[in-house]
Length: 254
Length: 307
Image (cartoon, rainbow over all chains, first blue to last red; front, side):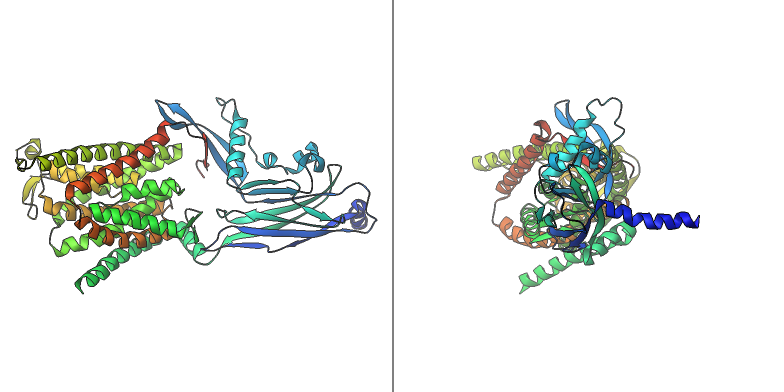
């Protein structure tokens, strides 16, 4: 048993060496704070490729993904019933990231093969997991397409082909714009090194997106102490109403 | 200046919200209405989720009605007893309304319900008001057309049991009609995020036969309690009251209301009513168009049911 463990310990660095190239990463910040004046944020992701062997001749490609927390989403389609447009069919998508950005060094078809995409779920379409659509809906793919289209229009899903800058096959960087309506959570950030569409190394880290200060206080309170939160809203309303009446009566009587 | 709303999870310009609050405040001061029926659709248009708009607007109405009812208390034009009876109905109605609201939310039809309610009620109220004030204007122009004769008939209302005496209103009637009116307004308050003044006031005058001078104060008094209850229900069951949004609307609203009152004093009653009717019809038309025309995006996203 002990010998086996020793053998393993010896073999692991060798396995890492076989690929020869590794990612060293930096982030402009590993935390996004949603404050009252939050109006979107730009995150700079940069790093270097560490290698102990000479640079291979085939071009190195880099893919960077940032994914917000995944939630199930109901996609509804309107249909004309009795002359008005109402929500008719619905498909539940089991898990869709609330935010997803993919940045690459070149055109998508040059950086990744379909098999690798399937295995690591990198492209936007693959990052969404949808298994069971109701039997009566035949065109379930339309619903997932609609989900992607709506979120792309809101800049929540971004496909940034060629937006990763790579210098000397070693230094890379990209900037990812995050819109104002972000959900809280740990945003998984992945970096893939590829050659000929095959992944040769990958690295993962997280960016923490959180409401802070007053935003955090109010949000948490509205969920955990709804009664107190409701009473507070009412108190503010009554004080404001009384205050306005009192101030304007005073002004008029002067 | 963008402000991130913690519950609506959207970033909206603070000036837009202050402006909207002010605009609706001016209108509500001019016309003596709560303004909820205008504010909630306007909040839909700027992209606040309907559930949040409805719940938050209920909270804002508490403020504007409270501001208004103080003046009526000073003038003793609030029938507290009638207000409390209406209230009993109002609470039942609000609870029913929130139940319906939550059920339809689980079906994904809450948008439709809220919008349909708006189109129907705005259309009916706006239309009636427009016709009535046009007639009033025509009559005033003909001059000499005296005030319409007031009839006080004994209707079916007076033959119902459980009679009660309402001193301030000078009425001796059954409690059943006020409770029914209360239930109706309570349901509307919960579903539409409105105080329901625009339904309550005509109902008090024409159905209950209350004297006009106590109607507005009493309606405000009971609206405060119903909307406060609605706010609590939405806050505890849906978590959709956005306090930051409410405060911004409030500030604009209370200032606007005072300016509006001054403008209102300088216009004739019929002109005011025609303007209000036109405005109501415009909002109604916009909402109806959204329902009747094919939307550019047929799909919409919502949180999964049961999560």
